[in-house]
Image (cartoon, rainbow, N blue to C red; front, side, top):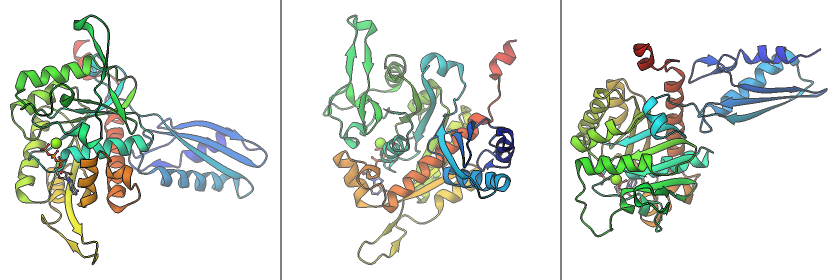
Length: 365
Ligand SMILES: Nc1ncnc2c1ncn2[C@@H]1O[C@H](COP(=O)(O)OP(=O)(O)OP(=O)(O)O)[C@@H](O)[C@H]1O
Ligand SMILES: [Mg+2]
């Protein structure tokens, strides 16, 4: 007689390749049903954007077959329950938000906002609940990149207690410093005003439940950026660079900045990595080759992937339709999905390994 115990034991042999633990230890097996000719199991992954989803599913089928033979149909349903970064400040400021990610770059113009927008949309396409905050006081560009014209609605009569409902596009909830300033007004917000606005985005916006809240930071590693990364209770940071040396030097500076304030660097993304000529199919390494991966290796941080140059990415940004929406199956979109899933996996790894009791409580007890 087949028992649920037997199936559960079979699943002890399936490892999550990113988390290096078996599905039972990770408490991912949520349901087992056995009928005369069918076995059904439900596995709750740590993110809907799991890069190993198919591998884990196949491994489950293989291991179950080993104990039940060929006479059963095996159905493995994959659900998800995104892991939460435990941080007392985050829980107070953003109680419904499980994880917060800063997208940063040392150098300007490397495609940070493009990457932030496409990653947010890719995670939402994979089924995650996603928010995006445009915190770039120098040039807020995300509303344009998402084709958002409307402003967030306000609720409440007392001007000191208004709450904002984020604008939603492509299933991503959005707030931007650009909503607060006129497009043609020179941006004179600096330092304390920037962190004030970010604090307001955290405390006065009705985000609801979110798996990932992504912040597009202003480029650079100056005082403003340092203040911002200390204001936001961050789960981790993503660093965007291009392959040329000047960008890589600045990417290292950004990495060091996060290390200094004890924020986990989730990884490096190399943008504008190469160009494939559409007429000949020939590859051109316009800004050099492999610098992002090499820097990640040198700095001991994960390399999350590379995105080629494609005019469609620029056009997508200008027209408010990110490439992952225009053409989700093209090479560039596939790379972006790969990066968003790698990032989600890094967040799961970070959260699974966090101490059960926040360090601060241990110190206070
Ligand atoms: N892979 C790519 N292929 C083609 N164009 C790209 C790519 N990545 C970004 N771009 C284009 O390059 C320009 C700069 O990108 P983006 O605004 O995302 O950079 P940024 O790092 O956010 O800049 P800033 O430092 O000003 O905030 C944009 O016009 C964008 O559409
Ligand atoms: Mg930008």
